[in-house]
Amino acid sequence: MPHSPPTDAELSALAAEVARDLLQQKLMLVTAESCTGGWIAKTLTDQPGSSAWFDAGVVVYSYEAKEALLGVNPRTLEHAGAVSEETVLEMVSGAMARYGAGVAVAVTGIAGPSGGTPDKPVGTVWIGWKRRGGYAHARLFQFAGDREAIRRQSVAAALNGVRKALTP
Image 1: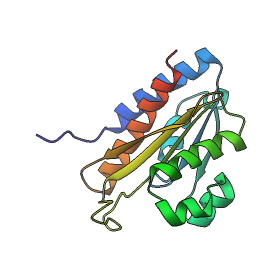
Image 2 (image 1 turned 90 degrees about the vertical axis):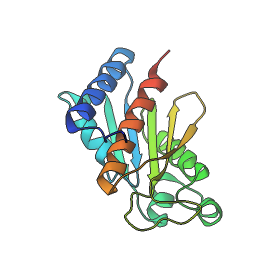
Image 3 (image 1 turned 45 degrees about the vertical axis):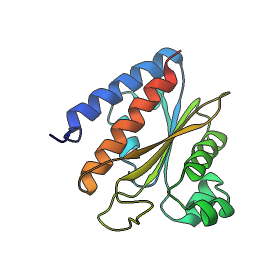
Image 4 (image 1 turned 30 degrees about the vertical axis):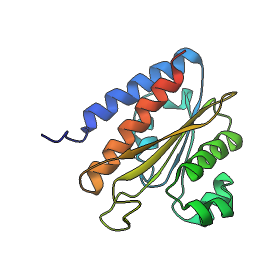
């Protein structure tokens, strides 16, 4: 039986855990989002008191926005594409460099229903995380379902990854 996408309540509970961890470590978070369209930032800032640990969120769909707002190299986009490990690593590193946060998360993917290719089908999502002073790392996900299901799963995976990044 396929796993159902996380509910609003489940996403809120995850965001509350992230908030608690950030507060305990006195860290700020920045998000850089493409296919999730700001959903990670919205889920986090739905938490009361989020201004104590949420620094900024940037939504970048176009190549131009990724370049201008996050410093993604045009050659990376041309050679690897927007949905790639290389691009998400540059997105998360760019978010960290441009904002005062101690932790960053970035996501880029194909939520569908169109846009997929045989090499990068709908549901292909790259998520990257970085903690100040550390190296950026990324993970490839292949989510199933419709556009909303893919985006919900992406938000949950991004938040779970932030929790891991905050684990000492």
